[in-house]
Length: 383
Image (cartoon, rainbow, N blue to C red; front, side, top):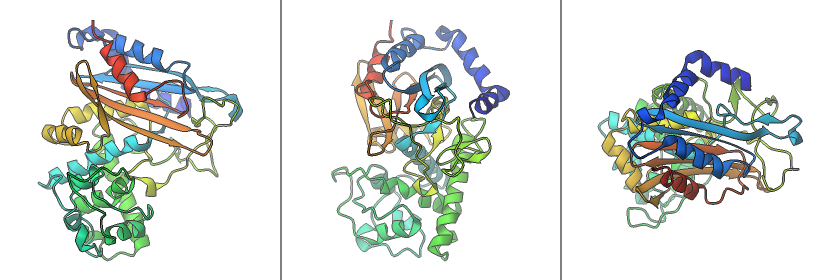
């Protein structure tokens, strides 16, 4: 798979574009900030402290630095395979940022915003509890909707809205729950295609319909707009040029997920499905995620005002690091099994139109605080 992916990038010119941008970093960065030094700091923070890793740094609409190290597969999984900047893996809950961009962009296209009520967007056939009818998109995206998780399928999400909230609104305590973003799998198709389009379907029919519509919309409006070469193939769960990778038909070249502190343990793979979409599951590499971030900053998904609200209100973001140059907004993603074999991913936005995406295929690492190390690497990149 590694050669197929690499050839795909080369053929479509993205690697050439990145290399060209990296030749003269001083020509595209603000005075005082050194993207190459930022990359050096990140490299030192990650190298030999986890199994495999990669990062991509963008500024002013271009990827200016990237690097990778370690292994996508260890010898415990037959053959060692290096982790490169084209290595794709699950990004976990960093998928939520993509979901927020997609949903809010779809709302803005309909002259709506984050104050829209979920009850006015979801299929009219849903029996939504009276207590839930004033829950807004903002409440949901900030994890302040007070919704109850019953499962990730369509029928379970419908039951979630039928069950009275435990409390919602700006002053409500945040309760992080994947159910808030699992609903994006239904909401995005309803906003784009009309909620009546799904009102008379069975749960099974609707599950398939919204899944396909959600995936098609994110591919078209997020990945294609970002200029990603393989936008039409990007999927929930592992995939390669031939399509979806399943447990029954694994790819011997794809990355596996490890526990860095227990290198003798074989790596594993999480075979997520469309039902995990919205909250997680997108399978991409660090430069592809960085390209999404810089495209967001360019105002191509949502308005500039909406992107600022996403950061300030933490819609699609988890928090911020207070650094020497301001607040650095971040989102992370992680997953692991009972033996702590898993992933960790981070995205972060910095004040001078700098963004970073970095991935590792282990959650047990010697890296330290993942968001803090990125913030420190950035602070120490000014001359």
